[in-house]
Length: 126
Image (cartoon, rainbow, N blue to C red; front, side):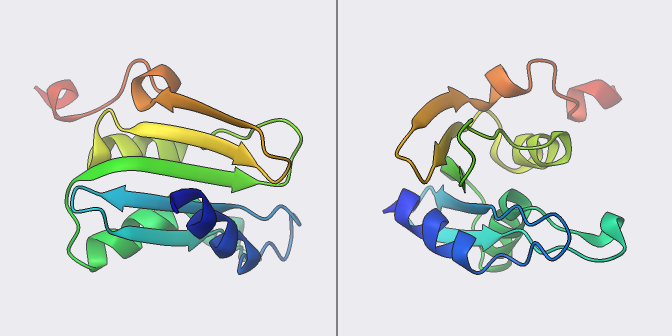
């Protein structure tokens, strides 16, 4: 169900400059699913990735604890989240399960700590 939500969100992506559609979905601790897609801007810094889109939608709906994240692209090679998304995922989800998937049926699951082995968080501010 989470993978389907990510695939469906990918279809709504607006990759007007890169042409690279990404969909993501997150499951909160209550089992609710929130999806997001990448939306690009001509001013590239204003672009939002699918992972952050999904997480921010979840937070806006009141979600505060997360179980899983799925990221879907059409690329042959599974595409991990960018550094900014990894940081936001750590801030909001901590060491969440992250599944990378493509439209060809390939998947691989990680813990976020595998993708972000030395996270910057509140402990870094001490």
